[in-house]
Length: 141
Image 1 (tube, rainbow, N blue to C red):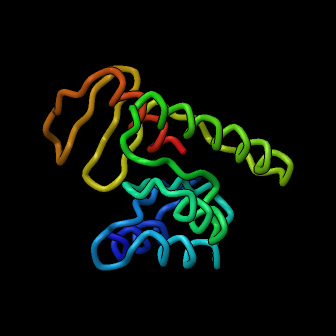
Image 2: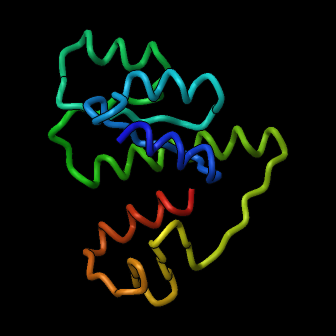
């Protein structure tokens, strides 16, 4: 939900947010406005709403991209990569360096890139290669 999302973002250092417009407790529009008050990282907005006016509202309130459902995981991955390329250039221009690592831990999730394994609360979870790549990108950035 949007409230938990904001709490996590305020605690963790992230480089991209994927926000669904129709989240419980706080919708994606409100969350995006609140994020833009404090952060410059890219925001990709997801929505079942595909009308032009919905896209315009999302982009005008601060989203960097708007993806209407249905979409494929590969399309979302390409859009994430595109936003991260731009954001990396922005960070480099500011003189910020990112540390590269082969293992990512966020909450109960641990993604081991070397072993190509995902653990949730210490238990191994099987995921597809595409899911692994998407999760790696999100956790890394």
